[in-house]
Image (cartoon, rainbow, N blue to C red; front, side):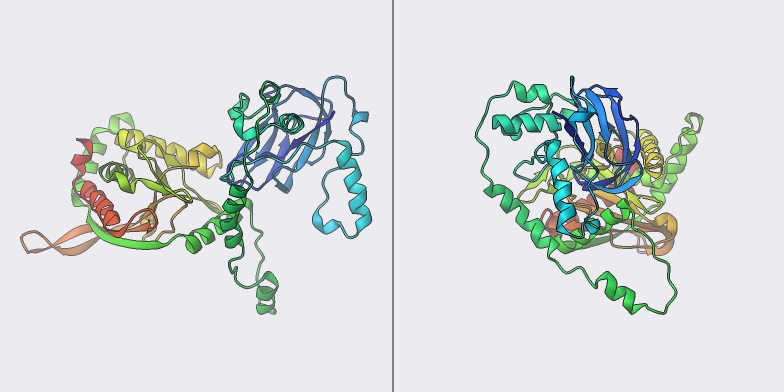
Length: 436
């Protein structure tokens, strides 16, 4: 029977996307792994691959359509021996606002049933979506299989037809844990969201303004930062760092690396300093996981990169094990592709710690918002010349940089956070130690 191709979730946080471009047309034969479409998520444009073979019988969502919800049917795939006549009168899902009475609803429901849609995408007990093809979900439902117990062999671990055909039925897990996991999300949704759109528009009646449409990235930033400030118990630790030794050491290294075309930035040293500090204070190298804390072994450091309309936080994995020149080259590459929105989800998800540097904009100091599930984020200000008292009790001029460590108190206590910040400061004030 015809199989509906559903809008995929191309990242764990994706709820909707834009079907930017179809790479196939009706009547095309496709195999598993063939590219079907380009889909814009809140962060990037990604290619969507076929997971089953067949013929594209009907395209339901036109390219360029925005706000397509995950699991919405976007096309119909015909299996061998089937024709367009088997599809029935399937049409693209109508917007909710267009459904003004019950008759259209009934008419829309009949064709949808004719296509025999696959069951909704399953989830694990912690709410993580399980990636399975529509055909695999349908077969699993018919056989009474629990997809959480099946390992996928398709692209990116997706469960495909062959995986469920050779699996045996097993009892499904209890639904109670799912309900329990959904409770915090429901509570967060019920939190006050401020004045309504109508109330704000009325407040500014008669005043000139321009309405700016929110794209997927800005919507995601708004939702995640609201969640972060409402649910994460932030506390803040501040230190001044003397940069004179680092600036001198950086100048020497850059002169020696000139022939290789390498120029290290202060930010490269900050990344390295934080990565090594996480190894020195391993209990602070941790993330919040709902009902537990995960202490990571590697130092995976995320760095905020401003782009037009938002920001990315690409992650430099195993940063403690990489040389300064390697970190510099990787950071430049990630930042360039972030600005072009060409990063894959695995390149901007994960990590336990983040850095947000506004020093290049002349900001002396600020408090950054933690990016969940990270345990902390370091806000970095600019280096400015200030009078300081040296060890001999004399006043001298030094280049001083102010930093603020925002910490999730559920993950890191005050003393542990202070220990982590001390390690970061020591690394930056004694930069040669980072090469030892």
